[in-house]
Image (cartoon, rainbow, N blue to C red; front, top):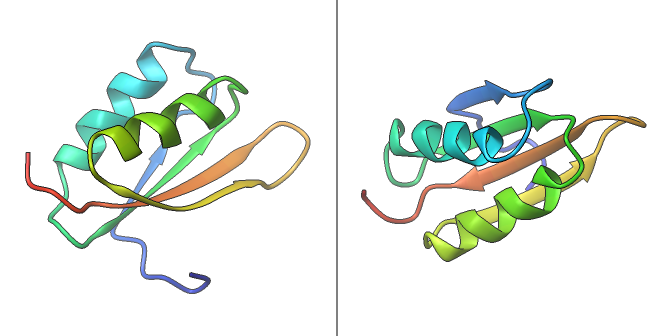
Length: 82
């Protein structure tokens, strides 16, 4: 899904669990169904917990990519209204 239009970006570098998940959930609630949220983070556990949680909420995880030695980018498409 390269080149997908990003509707909202969330930079949570420096944030640790459980706040990474809380901030991600609030951000996904803030966009419309069908829109894409990009999450930038540097907390290793969150690179696994956020995609899992988004899937549990019914959203589609389009990408989880380690972009450098410390950071990940996650793309999530909102699939269900809150």
